[in-house]
View: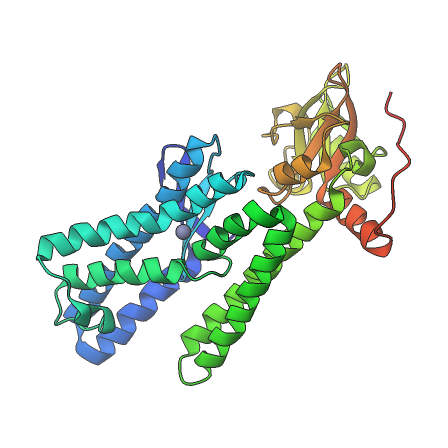
Length: 367
Ligand SMILES: [Zn+2]
C-alpha cells in the first residue's frame, strides 16, 4: 500500500503503518490535549497504541491460520480503521477460508478473556466509555477487544464476518454466487450503517462508505473470476510484446520504452528465457541515477513469475492480483518466453466478455 512505512518484520510478514494512521494518532493526541491536558493526551495515545497491538495480533491470527494452508502474507498494514493483512490468496476451500477468517476475532476473544481474568471481573461500563481515562486501562482494553470481536463479525466485507458469511454460503452455492450474495448483504448493511450515521455519528458514515466500496470490489473480483472461468492463459496473453535482451543497456531500454506502449518488460537471456521483469518506473529511476550505460540485467529486476500457456486463467488472475505492477511471463515447456499476462490483458478480456458474454477465443498459435 502506498504511503506506508515498515516498522517491523515477523516471520516473513512486514508490519507497515499507513500515513493516515499517524495522522489519526496526532488527531487523538491533540483532541485529548485541548480537552484534558498533556498527561491525558499521552494516556490516550498509550491506549490507542495498545489497542493497535491487539489489532496487529488479530491480523497475525489470520496470517498464522493462512500459513497452515500454505498461504503466505507479505505484509500487514495498520490503518485508522484497523489492520489489513495482504494474504497472497484466499484459500479456495470454503472450510479453509472460514478458518482463516475466524482466526482473527478469536485472538481478540482470547486477549479479552486474559485481560478480564487479570482484573477479576467483567466491566460493562468500560465498553460504553472507552475514552474515559478514569476507568482502568486494562478494563478499557478488555472491553475494546470485545468491541473488536463484535465489529469484525459484522457480516459485511471487508469485515471478517463478511468472509465467514461468504465461506458458509460457498459451501452451498459455490464461490462466485456466494460472493455476490455476501457482497449484496454487505452493501445493504453499509446503507443501514450510513443511515444511522446521519443521526450524528460521522464515523459511521465513513465506515459505511468503506464497507460499500470493499463489498463492490469483492463482487467485481468474483465477477471477474466468473468471466475467465474455463479460459486458459494463452487465450488472454499478449503475444506481441517487446522483450529486453539481458545484455542491453539502460539507454537501449529507454528507446524500447519510448517505442512501445508497454509498462512491463521481460528481460530475456540468449535462449529467450525470462530472467526477470523490468517495469517502466525502474527504467526511469535508472535514468535518473545516470546509469545509462549500465546493463539492464544489473538492475534490480522483479522476479519472473512464470506460467504455462495452457494453465487456467482463474489461477493466473490470483497470482496477478497481489502486486500492482505485475506481469506474468508465459513460457513454453522449454522455458522460452511466448507471452505476457498483465493487468492490461485482464482488462481487455473483461471488456470483451462484458460486450459479448458468450465469446470464445480462437486459440493463438503457441509454438
Ligand atoms: Zn480480521
